[in-house]
Length: 205
Image 1 (tube, rainbow, N blue to C red):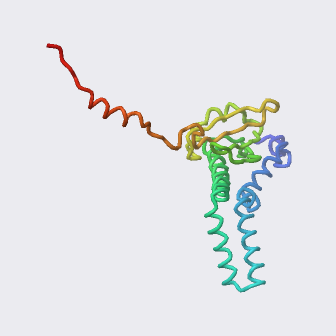
Image 2: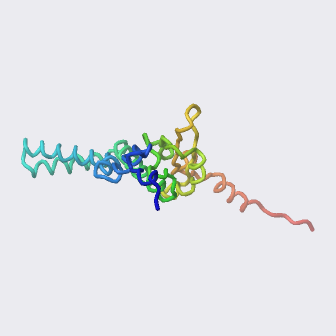
């Protein structure tokens, strides 16, 4: 027979109701929009721009202007590199979030670490992550291989904040900035080879 104490317990007596509420929000439409906020903002801005252009000119000319702007953006190297690096940041954020879930690097309520910001660097991306209660720097350090593989990178480097233990930096390394891009062959080999062939070889008798 169950005791009265256990029968009187309900979800309202749970001191961690906020965690359950945040988990429900994460699995809701609002949580999905927040996780895909960059893509949602980009699509919304593009749709509004096309709508404004179509109001001023026809929809055909609006499509031509959008196509010309895209071609110019891809043809300009600085702009193209900036767009590609931002796209990698968005990709790495989603892949890290998925890695946190698959490696069980989350709280008992299912809340994964919060990626506060992520920006491109010379070798890849750098993410600033807020650790939830129950997650620490050592958890990230133990899953560097999974994070690097999920982000399609060479390696992942984890650094601890010098002031706050709950802040962790994840550095995604995609390329070696010190590697030589153009290898210049030495001309000494081509010059010394004929000289060696012309040198007579004398043998002692």
